[in-house]
Structure formats: structure tokens, C-alpha cells
Length: 306
Image (tube, rainbow, N blue to C red; front, side):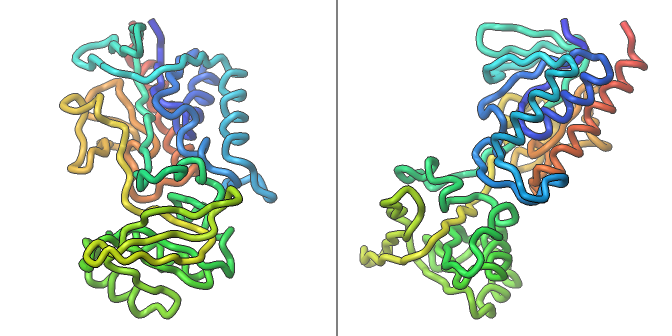
């Protein structure tokens, strides 16, 4: 039996663990599918407050983890496969273990969709990125590509055009899912070049960092080599909420819905980070919501002592 169980060990989960630990709640943190969350796949983080020279993503996560442990947080590896939220204490199953919690914080995060190309995941931080706001600054004066056809792809292409010398917007169809205003804005931008219809067949990285892409026209099967230094994949995120289907309220994209702050419709269950945030998706906003969830959980436990 635990006062607080936290699902997820990214920025939100670890911040919640620090706050819950300092409140003497001895939280149990379940690492989840991606220990450390998306920051563990990021190289240089320049926009997290307090680090004027930046910090490596894995180092930032490791520091947060040590800080949480310092205040009494316990960590267990493994992904949660089942939860019973029908009554308190809540039951959480991860692997062969079953845990009970008087309060539960869900900070399971979201996973960026990738193209599924060989070597793509290994090139994250070496020219491949899923976050323009995080990594755009590193591509000042360099040619890059944005892959995707929705509003987020258009938005990222427009944002990246402030830094990059050229932005190739690659989409597999001639039509876009994006809204007309976003398409028109991208088309009016002299730095953005549309490459449509085109499928990315290969990311060229002979020396371990991106040097270009090979794209194929699905209609004619013609291929084209585009020299560039960065590939931003903007085909969406999937919140890690499958386990909570039918148990917690979520929107049509699977993101959990907060009633107020971090509160859900189930008293004692709180949510934080990218699992409920499809708009900002920043380390600092995830950390802030982790703090909120821990404070809400502490208040709940004070009011429901048993």
C-alpha cells in the first residue's frame, strides 16, 4: 500500500515525485514504457529555466530522478498494463506486480509518431527531431525538412523558417489535412518549399548525422535526393493512455481530460504532463503540471485520511 503511486518518469512524473516526496508521502514511481520520457531522447535542452548554457536531456532527467530519490521516492521499472480505479485504494498492475495506492498520479506522457525508417530513432538528436520549438535553434542557416500534412506540420514549418535557410515541407499526398489558413501561410512563406506528393524513403546519414533524404513520388515512383541537415517529423503524437480507456475521461485523440487543474472525474486520480497536454508539450509545462498534481494529491490525502 502506497500513499501515492506515480505512473511515468518523465518531467511531469519526476516533478510530482519531488513534491510528493517533500510532503513525506513516499511516492512510488513506475517508470513506464519510456523511462525518462521524451527528454531522454533529446540531446541539448536550451529552453529549460536555470541552465543558461543548456543541459543534455538525459542529464536533466537523471538530476530530477536523483532529486526525487533524495526526498524518499521509490522507483520500479516496468509498464503499467492494467488499473482498477473503481474503488480506493486503486490497484495498479505492472508486470507481475500489483500495487495499491490511496492516490494516483497519471503522468504516462505521449510518444511522438515516427516514420518507421531504418536508423530513424537512433538519429534523434543527430538531425532527426519531433519538436521544432525544442530543436529549431540548432539549425540556424541550415536546410531542413518537415514531414507531415496537418496543422502542426504547417506550424512547425513556419516556425522553423525563422531559423533554417530552407524548409522542405514533405507530404505523401497532394492534399493536406491542415486548415486553409495554415496552408496559405506556409505557401506565402518564401523559405518554405512544398515537396508533394512525396514519401520519405530513406534518411541519409553516412557519418552518423543527417545529410539528406531520399523521397519517392508515389504516383510516378521517381526518386529525388534532397541535401539537408535536419528532419522534423510532424505526424502527430499518441498519448500513452490505452490502459485508461473507459476508466478516465479522454478526448477523441486519447488525451486525458482534467476537470480542474490536475483533477479527474475520479476523486484521488490526478493527471499531469503530455498525457493531458496536446498543445504545449514542453518540459517546463510538464514539470509545472507535475507540481500541481502532487499538491492536489497531498490536499486530497489530507482530506481523506484512512
